[in-house]
Figure (cartoon, one colour):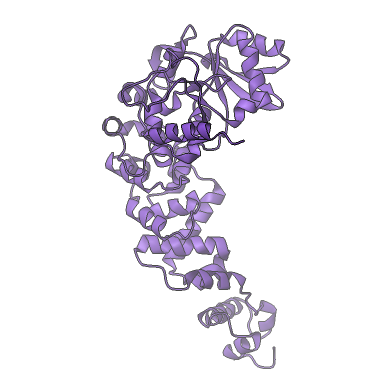
Length: 438
């Protein structure tokens, strides 16, 4: 029998939180005790009766549960933290599971080994141990508090509480914790921000940014991915970013490139890119980039494209170097720029670049020029991608040789493309004045 009461409670909770039906399925009612003392219920928090308990695939994952049990069996606390909790609340896929604990790093190693799990000290200075369970790695990091901070480098102490650990994180929606049963703990008020899809720094935005200037780009990436579509970015965050924008120039090109790739891969990155321009960040990362061209591209796309197509539309001064693109990525970006410069028709773009890259080239050229797409462009790209030039160099010997042979082939190819790939080999030979071959 269907539990209609439970489904109704989940739906009401999620609607109150602004999450909708997808996230409603990730909450389950719990009529136990009132909210945990560790869960910060602010005036803006949604009305959640009892404790907030989620359901998520990792709650039934034996590998993840084995790691949590290894820690808690030693008398310590262990929580899944960050993206796995955030995405479970949103009803979205979880890519990786990070765990936070009050067990010191050396005890984490000992407890893992006692449980028959492999422990790898991947970052002991930062309190991080990777525990391998069922062939998968789970990063376990001890609660930390900063003793001294030197930008990205800080001297930390591991005699910290969950609340101390939460205040070191970047955004409130990433400072959510859940225990092995799915009960959520919110030390910094991240739940109301998550439910409102509001990306907000934990504590003082200036301090969070100065700890790692890459957080400037992470803010815009999270705004693109999780921000409410009808709401502007957080004003305090934007003011702090504008004040600290020059700091992005201290970040390596590799790290910047990694963030820009992920930002542009978001379903709708145009508002975040426009906000980057408003805060003076885009000009420091990609001088000469045009946010309006990206917005136009997204309006033109028949279906979402990859980040590189979007980067090509955005443009900018030497993105291959500034973002440390791979050789293959740089070649493809140059190819799209050349296609626009050559003013290729949709059919020729398909012929010269293939279906996928030809489609990219047509869309990018339209976005950069601000012109509408020609009628029937997709069919033209497809037709060009399937076309095969019927003439070969051997067909022109001995009538043309050396440089003249290359020029003759190029002439014939232009003639063939201009006539929509229709002329046969015989017609092309006649066009070149070569008779007797077919």
